[in-house]
Image 1 (cartoon, protein in one colour):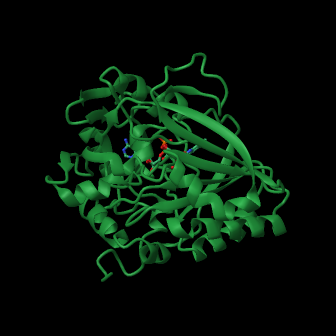
Image 2: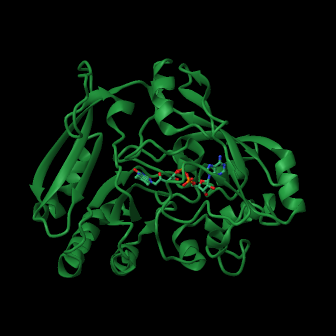
Length: 372
Ligand SMILES: Cc1cc2nc3c(=O)[nH]c(=O)nc-3n(C[C@H](O)[C@H](O)[C@H](O)COP(=O)(O)OP(=O)(O)OC[C@H]3O[C@@H](n4cnc5c(N)ncnc54)[C@H](O)[C@@H]3O)c2cc1C
């Protein structure tokens, strides 16, 4: 790897690492070298006593559940699908839903990274603590992440339920639903009067195989949490402070009902626990996330931009792996450690080997060191 980085520097090429290519933002795009870490995959070791697991960065999420289960362990939470690589999901703060459940980035307690100068460094809260903080949500811009240590928990089972409720009732009832379940989310399709609500709760009941359809499953956490989403789409997602979630959802519902009834893709509402990860949309407190979807053959811009204004107005911070239109200045205003992240990134990669055009456009104006 050190040889490859030296060659890229010598030839004046930039380098991006490819995960599973599931981001909706052009994070991994490059005209330079695109590095595939598929060979860096699998569980390295698990420590059931300390509830820790060390994994290679290229490990696909779908292979983590079965590997941890052999040690009686599981991920604390997972996102809507499990096709991503671990380092790729951590790069963007990938999350599931659940009031007390943080993102994958917040579960990272240690990392091994190969830096622009070819050195491999291990870091955590004690060793290279600032580099560690920058790596917990790294946008692929700090180095090649070859290993991650995660806080995990004992294996558990989940039972899933789907039901319908009038969308107008939800503006008041959302906090109650969110508090009542380990995982709660809703999907509302523009033009429909009812939303689909989905809850998953821990159970001691024996798994039922075959698992059945979404909404009917009872099985191990990693069997029930991920879904099959074969239709290609693009997506925008913002996280707003939890207490503003219902009002924001109502404002989005109103705008979409007035102007975007023809969109045939759902709006999704989830929650994520607060954390201290520098670039995390949940930095400093719990959040509600609201995401808009659109098919890839449609022009999503008028729809996304119109609703984005509402999400931003409610204090929203964007998901790094999805579409947004904020610039570096707006991001620095919304994320208190944004400039720190750039400062540490630049310190370890002064020539910008791990940057691309998309990331350059997100650099805070006035430089990383300007006073916050
Ligand atoms: C159908 C679908 C469902 C989704 N569901 C959710 C969800 O439920 N919750 C959620 O939060 N997000 C969700 N996402 C977004 C997705 O989880 C993120 O975009 C995630 O980052 C994609 O991971 P990836 O492995 O595909 O990484 P890529 O998209 O390939 O890359 C993401 C970034 O990681 C970098 N990178 C990857 N590997 C490394 C490495 N080893 N070292 C350094 N940098 C690296 C890349 O350079 C890039 O900057 C979904 C996306 C899709 C398409």
